[in-house]
Image (cartoon, each protein chain N blue to C red):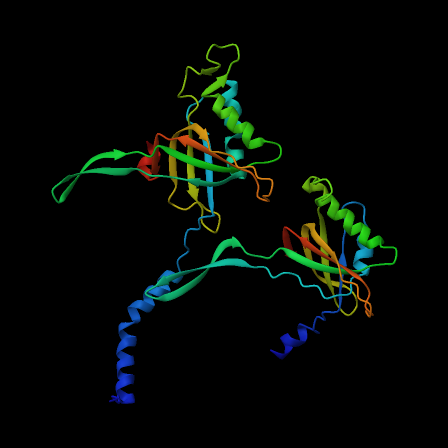
Length: 209
Length: 167
C-alpha cells in the first residue's frame, strides 16, 4: 500500500525544514570562515635557561635558534595530567603528573651540523675523559645545561597565534635509535629526547613568571 | 566591456614560446641545443596548494591548507642528433645528479640550473616568463626504436624543480 503525500504538503514540510536548518547553515558558514591552525606552521625558539660564560655553553647558545629554525622537523609535546583517587563514585584530585620528556625530531645535513650541536649540548651534561677512572665525567653544574623553548603555532599571515607553549628545563636525555638503511631515499632523522621540568601554555600571567 | 576587450588585444597563441637555459646545463652541456631540438608539447605543472575537509552536522567544508601540493615535475622531449651530442649532455647531467656506476652524486649547488619558459607575442617580444628554479634532472629515457618507424628518436627527460614563478 503506498501513501500519496501531496506536493503542497511536501513543499510545506521543506519550508519548515529550511527554517529549522538556518542554525545549521549559520554554523557551517561560521566554521568555513575560520582559519584553522595548521600543524605544519610553527616556530620554535630555543634559548639557554641560564646565562653562562662557559665557552661550551656559549657555543650551543649561539646555535640554538639557528638549528631549530632550519632543521627541526617536528616536536612531540606532552602536557600536565591529573591523578585521581576514587572514593566510591566520586573522583578527587590527588596530584599533578608532569610530563617526563619532550622529543625533538631533526633532519641532518651532510656536514653533521645537528649531530655536532646535539653532542655539544650533551657534553654540557657529561663528557668523555679517557684519563678519568669512570671515563665519563658529569659536570658540577647540572642546571646550567638546561634550555627553555617557546613553541609558537603561526598564523597564515605570518604572525604568531595566541596559543604559544613554553617548555622549561629541557635537558638532553637520549638520542633515539638512528635508522640507516641502504635501500632508503629518506633523509636521516635524529630524534633528541629531552627531560623537561615544566610545560605550559603561555598566558599573560605565565609569561610574566 | 567592448573597449576592455579591445584593450586586452589579441589572443596569446600556444605555439609562440621559447625555452631558455640561461646558465646552460650542469656538466657543460649545451642548453641551446636542447631548446632548439624540442618539438613536443610541454606542460608546465599547475601550481597547487593542499586541501582538507572538515565536517559540520554532515556538511562538508573544504578548505585550503598551508601545504604546497604542486607536482614539481616537468617532462621535456628532445630529438636526438646523429652524433648523440644532445643525449651525451643529458646523460652527463644525470650522472652528476646520481651516478649508478659508483653511487655518487655532487652537491646540489653544482647540479641544478634554472629553466625559463617565455611566451611571445606576434612581434616575438617576451610577454610572460615562467622561471623554474633549481631544476635537477631525475630520469631520462630514449624512446623506443621500431623497424617501420618514421619519427625521429627522442630522449625524454623528467626534471624536478623547486619553485615556479610567472612574471
